[in-house]
Image (cartoon, rainbow, N blue to C red; front, top):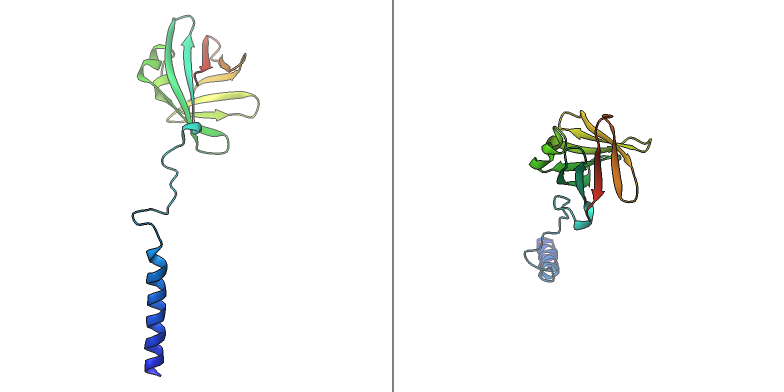
Length: 134
């Protein structure tokens, strides 16, 4: 009985080693979402017509069903106060989008404008446009 058990265990180990040899070494079978694909984001040129300033921002990967990551360069504070601190792009379901800071406070509310552009509607004095750069 012991001989049969040892033979069965040896056969299982041999089969496992044989199956493992066909596997490519140094390949991580885990698929990670930490590196976004190039199609995950959209770039925007943000312009303030009154201040005559422009900056670049990126709408990135989804973080919920209606929100995506949003990052703006440090120069975006010249376009609209606090815009460099924007972290989230949230679709409200009524055609408007809120650009939110890290605390979840809205910096700008934009609406789909002409073509590939968004236009600020809140605050009312914001003459700011987001034009797709990609």
